[in-house]
Amino acid sequence: MDEQGFLKTLGDIFLNWQVLLISFGAFAVLGVVRKMGTKYEGDKETNQIIGGFAQHRWFKTFLPVYPYLLAGGLCFVPGIPLPDKVGATVALKLLYGIYAGWLSDKSYQLISSFVYKIIKKVA
Image 1 (cartoon, rainbow, N blue to C red):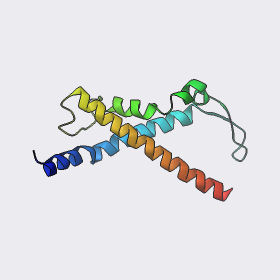
Image 2 (image 1 turned 90 degrees about the horizontal axis):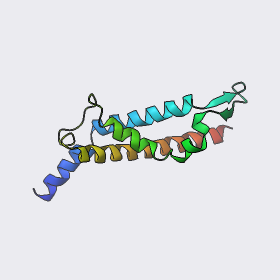
Image 3 (image 1 turned 180 degrees about the horizontal axis):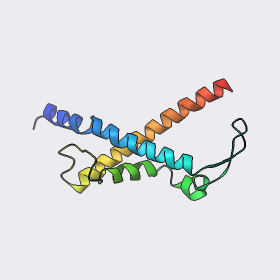
């Protein structure tokens, strides 16, 4: 296989709608878990965090790993569509899941910093 054919194959595998679906799925699941696992007190203006499992030390310690675990797990769900070449072996599914988790993690960082800057300007 020549170099351009190899790069085209990599592009077909790692730059497609399936990886976006898996990374968005991990992003959404983690966002819902963090939101549901946080307890608030007060009205809308004085909404303060008072606890919940998402504020626990162990949850926050392993928080950077969760997108990779979620995306890797989603690659093994039978109904999730994967490119033909990725579904062949377990190692490729894990690599694909790690890549989708990385994409999910970077998306979360980018969106949260953007929202934080907007809230900081408004307040």
